[in-house]
Structures are given as C-alpha cells and as structure tokens.
Amino acid sequence: MHANTTGKITGIVKDGNTGEALPGANIIIEGTVLGASADVDGYFVILNVPPGTYNVRANMIGYTDVVVTETRVNINQTTEINFNLEVSVLVSGSEVTVIAERKVVQPDVSASTANIESAQIEALPVQSVNEVIGLQAGALGLSIRGGASNELAFQVDGITLRDERNNEPITGVSLSAVEEVQIQTGGFNAEYGNIQAGLINVITKEGSPNRYSGTITFRNSAPGAKHFGPSFNDPNSYWVRPYVDPEVAFVGTENGGWDENLQSQYPAFDGWNTIAALSLQDDDPSNDLTPEAAQRLFLWQHRRQLDITESDYVIDAGVGGPVLKGQLGNLRFFASYRGEREMYMLPLSRDSYRQNNYLLKLTSDITSSMKLSISGYLNQVESVSSNDVGAPGYFRSAEGIANTLTNAGFTTNSRIFYDSYWALTDVEWRSLSAKLNNTVSSKTFYEVKLEHTQVDYNTRPNRERNNDRVYEIVPGFFTDEAPFGNEEELVNGIDGMLMGVRANAFDTSIFKTTTFRFDLTSQLDRINLFKTGF
Image (cartoon, rainbow, N blue to C red):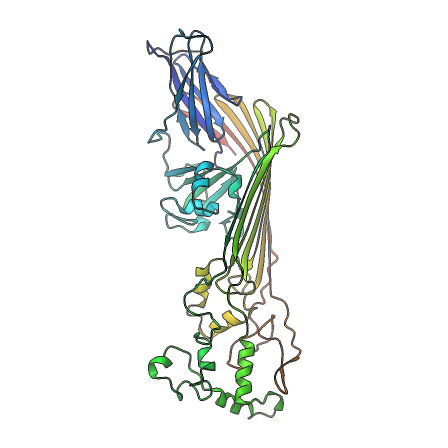
C-alpha cells in the first residue's frame, strides 16, 4: 500500500475567437521536461507531475503563446487548465500571461483531503509534522476522526514508515525537508489497506541541480514547571508534608494539630516517635533510630531533585544542492536533521524525551523521462518505557506521565522518588529505499520501488544500585545511595516506599521488512484513468 507522490494537469486548448479545438497545440511545464500535445478534441493530459507551483505554456504556430502562472499541482489530484489562444497579430515573441485560479471544488477528489504546501507550513506556528496534522479539521495530533495513531498510515515519498511491532507511525521527519503534506481523512480508494483513520503522505524536497541552499531553525523554551501546585518534594507537597510538618511529623497525623479536613488531604502517618520505637524492637542494633534520625533517613530517601532545570528545544535544519554539477544525471542531494528534547513533567529513569531524525535523499535524472531517487532515513528515540513488562510504548507527554500517577495506589510515591521504577528504552528506525520513475508518454508512466526497513528496540533496567553503606546521614548511622539505582530485591524505604524490584524488563527485539512494488498508471481517455500494480 503506497500513496501516489505526483499529480496531473489536464485541460482543453481552443481558438479564442471561434471556440474550436486546436489539435496539435503544445503544452509545456516550464523548467521541466514534462509536456503534451492536444488531441483532435483539443484535450491534453500531463501525468507524473511532482507537487509544486509551475508556469504552464501553450503554443501553436499562428497563435500567441499563453502562459498560466502560479499553477499549483498537488499530490494525487488533478489541476485543470483551459487555454484560449488568440490568432497572432502581435509582435513576434509576445505572449499572454494569465494567473491560475484554484477551483473551490476538486471534481476528481472523492475523499476528505487537505494539502499543505511548504510555504504554508513556514507561516504556521508549528514545530513538527504532527502539529501540522493536528491543525486540520477532524484531527487532534495523530488522532484522526477519533481513531488511534496506529490506525493511520504515514508515508514519506510514498514509502510507508511504520513500526511493524505495534503499527505506530514513524513521524519524526524534519519540517525543513517537507515540500508538501497531504492528509486524507476518509473515502480511501481500494488500493489502500490497513487504514481506518487516515492517510498522511509527506513529499520531501529535492536538491537543486544548480545551486546550494539551506535553512536552520532553533526553538528553545525556558525551564519551568509543567504541572500546577508546588514541587513534588516541596515541604508542603502531598508526599512530604505529613513527614516534616512539626505539628504532626513526630506524633502522627491523627494526634497532632491537624483537623479532620486537613487530615483527609494527606496520607495518614503514625509519626516518627512510633517508627523509632518499632526500630528498637528487633535484635538488630544496626537499624536502631531516634525519631530525629528516622526523619533524616526519610529526607535522604526523598532527596531526589524533581524540578525542571533544563530547557525544551527543537533544532530543524536542511541543506541541498548538486553533488557533481551537471554530471551523473544532474545528481543532487537534500539532507535534513531534526533534534528534539522535551523535558518530562518530572524526572523518571531519564529526565527527558529525546529524538533525532536524519534524512538523505539523492536524485538523478537518468534520462529526460527517467528519474531515480534513493533515500535513507534514520530516526532515534531515547525515552523511558511506559510499562514494566517490556511491551512497546514509552513516555513523552506530561499527560501520559500524569495518568500513571493517578490511582497508582501504594506505588505512587515510588514512581516519583525512585529513579529506576521505569526501564530505559531506546528505539531506532532505519529505512533505505530506491524509487525508479519512468514517464513512457504524457499519458503513461510507471514506478518501481524497493524498500527495506528495520526497527531495533533496546529496553533495559537503569544502572545497578551500589548497596555499600557509605553515607553517614546522622552520627553513627550509615546507609546506601537508595533510592538511586536499580535494585532487583524488594526494598522499602523508612516510610514504606518501594525502592526495588520494578524495572527489570528487557527487550532487544529487531523487526525487518523488505517491500517491492510496481505501479503502472495510464490515462485511457478524458474520463478513465487506469492504475495497476503489485
């Protein structure tokens, strides 16, 4: 299942005075080798036109040339241009220029479709392709028509980028590399499969065969809280106040100065006097604690810095141009990079989500009608697993992290203060593809595509904890570095907080997919377009 990456131009050429068809008139897309001749009815069609804005010229001996400027061609859509040529009575070389008008309704579009050009994207307040999609009607991020992200197809230059393990789209492509984005939200043709929500088709830029050009964008957000209320380890926070408030910390929340209303807002706690007394009841003198020492141990085990101290950022860059000017079929390249860091709402096993995306596209005109494109794509994610069993999924949004803290029961404080509760997850997607496009005539072309993708998962526990008791938190009492580092044994803190056992999942899955596809497209007549392939 591959979406088209080109559009077509059709129309009729007539005599501007008599209205009669002008068979044999030439229609040329300026700056390209694409063109056609009008048939006996004056009708013409030009297939396999890359998306973009063009000047289209019509000429015929004895008539004044007409040039239609600002003609926009979109992916998988038809642009109609009708020419009315006037008998030449002007000075030789004169021409008539007309500005193209886009139709309000596209008659050949049966689906709900939106096309966003690179110029429009540059004017939008967006930082990613996902945000471009989210601005469209019926879309919320990658949720289209209420569907999940794994119910849509995401393609770059007609090549599907999908994690075969969980069917999730791979969407980290740089905005600098985008020529056009087409979003189709319904009415899918029979050629598409495994789609329920939508089809996203991204066309990337080609490097110029004549000059070098590039762009770079850097966005930075100052560090700041991503939640309401005080910090998680603030003395007045839900998880800390009962243990440090002088009114209740030593005698307990039910015996101190808190009224019933205040007690209901915080966890119940028996007080450090009770905790210290319990430590004296066993035969192990090494764990004997005074109430003050017990509280000091609590503060040690909750010392983790949970404030956001670093910024979010996005770097987006692209550069293109000739490889060997004028040689190897005007061989040209376009390379892009997108790097992103998004700080978590609170630090987990890592303090942030990081993504790096690289794209390299080589294009060569083997002949005037045959083009070869080779693309390499690499997407790397460093994150934290959103489960403890090694299944796919990782944290990114503040909402996703907040949901794990809601109704988490006795493990809630562990998820906050234990730095190894969640496993580390690295995911790397690699794709290498080649596409040969051959225009047989103005009405027929074919494409041959070969694609290989590989997805590597690496999920593992955080670093191992050092259990040496080398930290003297009060005179004569030593403890280890907990809650830092992964601990495979069941270990509880002084307040019962879980500080071990959790993130022991491993995943070193590798998924490989190789796809070969052939597509043939031919305009049989003015009404019927024939497509076939395998």
